[in-house]
Image (cartoon, rainbow, N blue to C red):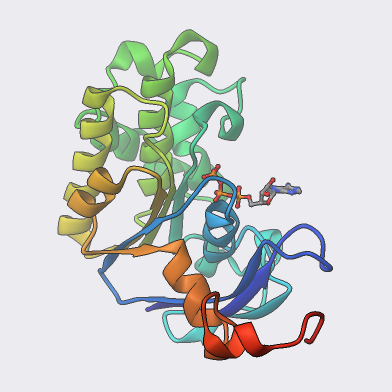
Length: 240
Ligand SMILES: Nc1ncnc2c1ncn2[C@@H]1O[C@H](COP(=O)(O)OP(=O)(O)OP(=O)(O)O)[C@@H](O)[C@H]1O
């Protein structure tokens, strides 16, 4: 289970962008999160991916509260989660050929000898030909690079996948290929998915359950403070 409990997070402690959000994803469940641009979805996804330490609240991963973030997270924790970001170029080392980019997590965890087999296994269903695997990021399209980034996210066989608008800039056929690859991976491994996006139709098709940012925010605000509440209307201006 992946549980975000009362998470408050952001880039300035005095003005957090995520405020007291709670969300639970059951093992193997696919949950989509919809919301307007700039509301804090990516920030929450980064917290769930152990990439952004929240100001307060708890992330419980497979029954254990997370205490370390980024490079302070224990390797077993980090490798339980695969992440795909919106912009593949920002998350790819431009010096690496696609085959090495996909194998990067294996090298980083001392499993270099598995690289050749695992890259071949992942590349074929994603349409990454041997020719593409030899190229560097600037020599491939965004869609081809995003396919490689998805393969990299799957290479350690994570139990959880966090996808932050991975198909936002892609055409319909690349989107379909990525979604199918993720669905196949989940069917084969039972991995859970937390997908953030704007595309309601895609998320609804892809996920077991879709939640809207406003609903998460509403449930984190005491009833009397919610917009439209008679209690909120009666509250004097400036009252806490
Ligand atoms: N590194 C950062 N430093 C300061 N502010 C940031 C940083 N990253 C994001 N923000 C701000 O935090 C807020 C939430 O951003 P976030 O990327 O989480 O939103 P989002 O819901 O994912 O948006 P979108 O759907 O447009 O990707 C925005 O106001 C954004 O400008």
